[in-house]
Length: 342
Image (cartoon, rainbow, N blue to C red; front, side, top):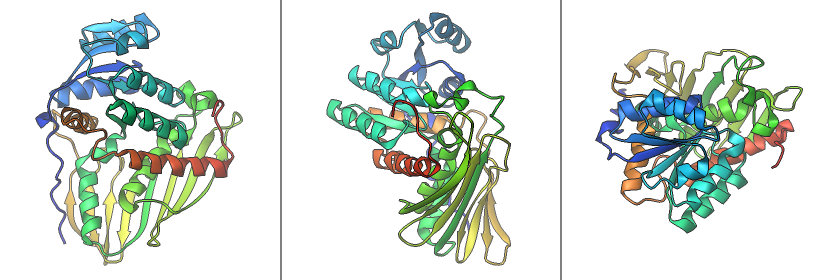
């Protein structure tokens, strides 16, 4: 038993494109750093409703142009593609603005508040002939490709169970947006999307969803527990919480062995191949090279798809995003959690 080599190419090998950043918040800072360090692309413009915020971001990352509105950013002729980094509640509207402007758009996960909003964006993008993709960076990582190869080859036997958890101490003293239902806050869309997307990556479509959880006084989930099953009878046991730091590990269990991903499973995780007698028979370090960031892989994949004239990326197809959104919709339905304006 041996782990396969990853098929994910070096992000630096992808063609360079010119990015505009819509919403200069914390996640956008990680994105800009990954563009500059790990790819041949560049961030050439940033847009915010506050010109001061845009200018501050531009100064920090040597971005040539700062715009005081999203409309001005989308009208910038030097921008090839836009990265949407606004709150979840705004993703649909901002993605549609980008599509209407004819800009390719990479939308931070979770892609929208619900599957209906995601489908609306994808329909508009196909009609306009514009590339749109979800920025689920984890699914582009080398170790995720290794996991897919192991499961697909039958190396660990028939798939039985997937385990994954994601917990961070983000409430009540974390970002305000996570506490506010009108901004599509809560643990699920911010943290739970990682284990749910990982399970989808390993198992494919979920045909049964069971969920329980705890809501805050304002009606967003503080933590959620999710059980998924697929047509073949495999199951996923998943959890997320914004109340505390959890191990953030994952395991993929088959009838002949298992894969273990160390915390954080969704990032630079080590992968261990364990046989049916609990012996580690192979392992692969997950640390990124010094000149690559975790986000660099999704940025490179998007640049390849845009240069090739594709309507979606091979890693995060529209169908993939819709499956994950539909699963989260069902989790929220079972928790009794809705967002204002849905």
